[in-house]
Length: 239
View: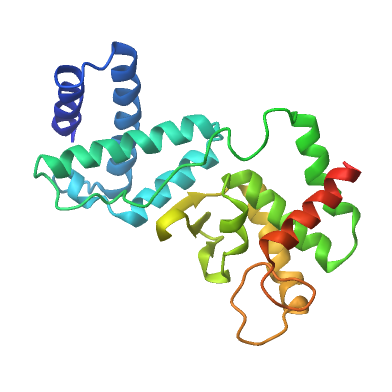
């Protein structure tokens, strides 16, 4: 594993002329990831694992681990980018057949909320649904927490199906532009809000038995993008 990292760093230095601080960041991030892989896969009576043991499941566990350690979204995004770039290098060098990190992304940074909004404003906004003792209040709480935790687009949020959320593993699967799949980790607060909605509310809102949408309107149908913005506008006025 260490040889692969060394080769990648050498390529960055020689071929791309990356500065030392960039190389140091890649080195630290990849060594941390390598330690996690060894911890998860190594056997006491066998040889050390190689990068071929890394699969989608292991990568998702790594993202959950980063979230549990309370890394900032920007730091998580950087670490995910380092891993993806490293595996692209291994594929290009013929060390691996495909990149196991393809389609996996860290949280978006600086795009989920306008720059003018303060942390206090965000907290007040997230608290507004709690003041409604209705099924819609729990639904709205889950939507806002999930949107804030992931930075996904509103279109992606309302397009989610129930099967796209894995609360046990702590991630959500969404499809962005060009139907490109993204796997995004979610933190414990968002997990609790979505679980509360699924356990207590969704079945009460559900209309047609075959509806797969995660978030439903009062008619039991998929909430639309326009419907979400109307809900958000109402909470913004009260916050």
